[in-house]
Length: 265
Ligand SMILES: [Zn+2]
Figure 1: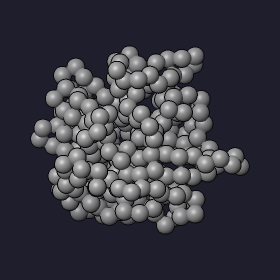
Figure 2: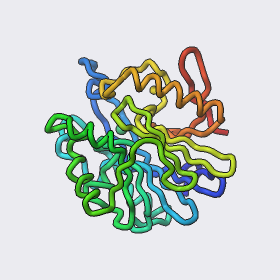
Figure 3: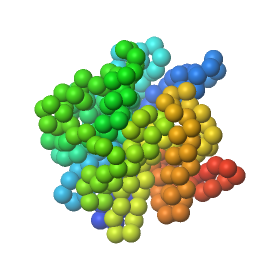
Figure 4: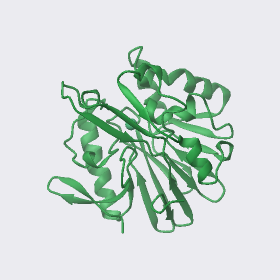
């Protein structure tokens, strides 16, 4: 794999994958009538633990969901499964999938359609409950039928709070962007890497005061962003930014009342 797209965490190895780039108007993320286009990558993470292959978040899926057509554009030459293949893995090798929350740019290949037939998919129950209450055409609401079917069929497991999915793969509930939003700490042999999901999905979110129109609870998002990024700084842990187009693995340092990205080495 190209340099910079994977890193070792103790005995585990994390591959930073790619499901293309979306382009949307800033008003879709921040509200208001600001006219500027914003670009975001999607970088699902694949972790080799030795016995298991764990995917964290799952991109948009085979195509842009219909409800986002016109508002979002999806650009990609290769999708998540192509990139997995290049890294030497097939969809059926994946044994666990952790979904940070139920937005369509995070659940695609896991739910629509379920593409990892040997995997257990982990969703926080609070995220499902919130999605059920969303308006009819909301992206989160669209994930509900697949999650409910998964629970019924046994391939989806609902979590209730912080949990260790596997030794060294620890989810922590940090709501704000959505209810039940979970981040992931990957820890082994004194090494640690943090996956922030949409709590801090790109470098611009290292400013804890950035208010995104897409956050369910902006105050909770702000508080959790500060706590989580402070812990990453204290532990000197690399942070993987899901939507950051370039340099998606960084370290963070305090600056003013926020944080800045520094190179990981
Ligand atoms: Zn997102």
